[in-house]
Length: 116
Image 1 (tube, rainbow, N blue to C red):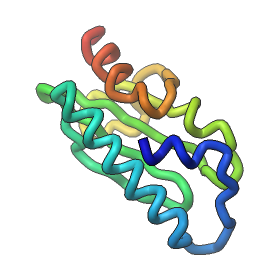
Image 2: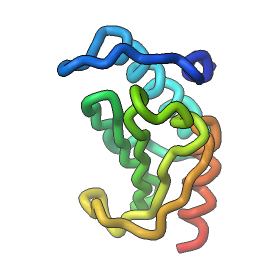
Image 3: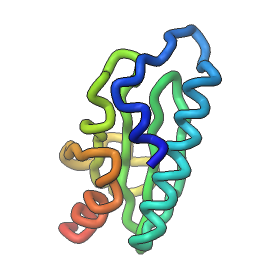
Image 4: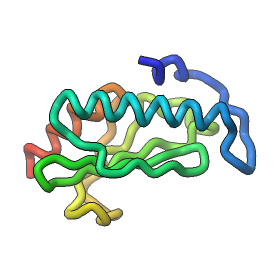
């Protein structure tokens, strides 16, 4: 996993997204798509932001929200990914907050989808 190489990495802070962060974000998106595809989940949207990103996952018309904290200031980002259910693909308030490791996002999403 390319993303795992960034654990403990100190990202350069800037008022704009750096090339270093953009490369990291692209790797996250690719790995997220790959791990979700293995369990039949689609990445409905991937939303870049300023040193953080969010994604909406979809399976059988049910949605999951995923969010990564600002990687410049949250060194534990890999082990603290927010994952929660959504009523629809624009439900930003969603269900109860759950957290997992980056490499467990697809498994956590499947678990939450199976519960409701």
